[in-house]
Amino acid sequence: MIYFDNAATTAIKPKEVGESVSNVLVSGLYGNPGRDSSEFSVNSGVVVNQTRDKLVKLFNVPSNDLVTFTTNVTESLNTVLKGILREGDHVITTDYEHNSVLRPLAQLKEKRNVDVDYVTFDKETGLLCVEDFEKYLKPNTKAVVCNNASNVTGYVLPIKQISEFCQKHDLLLIVDAAQTAGVEDIDIQRDKIDVLCFTGHKSLYGPQGIGGICFRKPIEIEPLKSGGTGIDSFNTSMPKFFPTRLEAGTMNVPGIVGLSAGIDYVNKKGIDNIKNYINGLVSRIMETLQQYPEIKIYTPLNAEITGTVGFNIGDIDSAEVGQWLWDNYQIATRPGAHCAPRVHERYGTVEQGIVRISLSSFNKDEEVDIFLKAIKEFMDIYRRGL
Image (cartoon, rainbow, N blue to C red; front, side, top):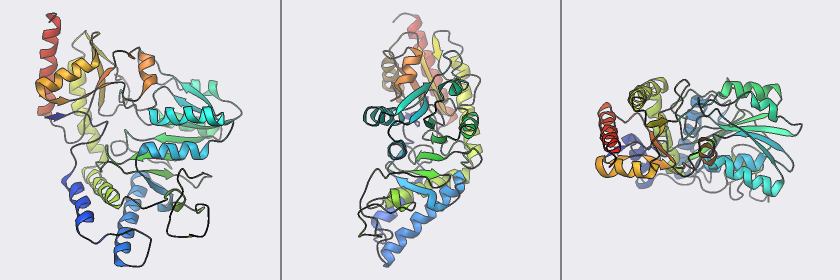
């Protein structure tokens, strides 16, 4: 089997990730962090803080107090958007967003009268219309929220330009790094990213069920969840200080330890090396797909991209193409809408969907060879009208 669905989750992990998770579960040495002075609690507290320290270095966070753990980037974004935006606020986002941004904003619009505008992108080039941010600016604009890269096309958004707009108008910049954490150089201080939301199960090679939020500085935010923290127990409200304010309940210690091992793998390989390796595979795929006039490529040809390629073959339903690739070559792809409805509305692919392939550092040249062979066979069949 060939796994080309890494934008959803990296199913193939470094062996150290599984070993570290297993050790937490079977060693009998790990309890609840921060709950007592026993060695069980201390062991968990140590590995949790070590992982915070690694994330501080990875994203250049000012302090490990500003690293909060969640279950995934969806929870991170819900926590941030619902915790920061108030009645009557205005927020600017983009047509490239995932439902983890679009749905919370839709809820906030309905329940808190939060006003939302969407910056679109050029259908021919795939480039974001950055100049439109100024057009949507209002007196009550509070924040810009955008992903770092599209999960449909792999296009890396111009975060530096978006950040400059936010700094000019004193707006919060909230970035969804689901597709880029571990494969792009992210520096929240350099790029003035106020809030970075990330997940562990994609290019950080951690297990599912772990993610987080990194803050450039403490901000006023209402917790999404309330509950036990192990401290200040007689206070009916969550503690004011970070990271405890946003970490109610028992922490996912196995997931955090697995994430830690994934970060070690990324650091050992080197983000630039990982990116260059994946880009080399993607370049081969893009060059071959361009040779077929019947194939429409949605991934920008002249912009920075991740390891994701979105395409369609004629007017064939994307699900049919994806199923054929699996049935005949056991290649796992992701056809459909990818939880990004505005991308498909913009491209006119609401009914057809888009075939997405997404690569990781574990994919090989031989797998790309097989994929390109499969595409050639499919195109031969297609051209014969079968």
